[in-house]
Image 1 (cartoon, rainbow, N blue to C red):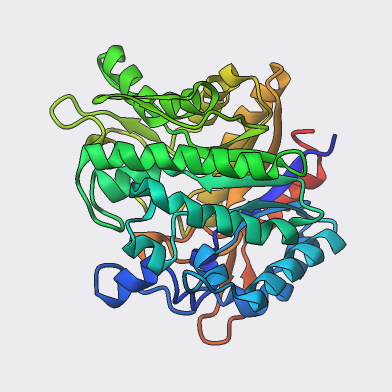
Image 2 (cartoon, rainbow, N blue to C red):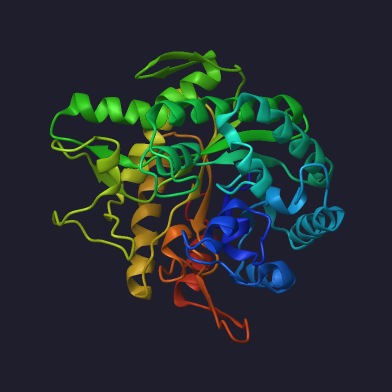
Length: 395
């Protein structure tokens, strides 16, 4: 079996001009940094894919922008469907296996203004979207229904840092319920044709009192998976019934260690950082390579194939980036040697891009670009990742 070795991106962060999405809407109102042209990938996708091929990567994870496909409630943008099909076909031609994410944080503006995933009745619009994109996925083996659903729940409805800027725990769990239902709807529609999974953020979580750390981890990770398989979502407000379905694989996004503060709300404190002796990234995230191994061990309880769908560092120090990659991959290698079913590693990200509410300052990319000419500039780390892949380090 070919081990997948490549990079990840998200549509809103790299394509540019995604004017039909809720993040664009809020940026125009001054609530978020503007993405603008981003990396101009929508126009330069051929060049980017050619560069991936030259670098020797055999896989690429990217997302489809829902707002581009449905800029209006009842209008499908056929040109956008054609463009995404062209991207898939070019990847396949170059020997690069596409992993396609259907939902990566952003929503069509019209859908968001209807309440988004807060309202049960809005799931019919999601179903129409999945139906529209299903036909362009020919040749794709791996489809992810949604990316980091709990980050959307926490940042959008608990901390209020992201659209729709709400702080209401009951609404947060209602959104979580419908993100699970959205996965189940898509799984029912796509399984059999594709391997359908979900991509989950799985940080390492520590707390002086292990019981509290365990409960936070349950809320962050395990209750979501348990609900998919069992049809019941546990919340602090009681149980919610959800559509039971399945997963063909689990995508693991791992970046950092969270230390839960004993003096603050445990979930909110996951997103606050203080000096504690760990190395830090431009995002303020702790560098803790062993955590990627811990995430693999935890996800393995569900007995599904696993992919590291995101792992990366925001830094302008290329030696630090290379050290980060090697340190984390060494722990992935250990997990594989111990028999855990890990089938791919995707570094985040292929190219420096728009980092959500942080704008363009954090540099996650293996490739830089000139914002005036759009010229792509591979960094030293791009070649380091290639050398690890060519050596079949994890095979």
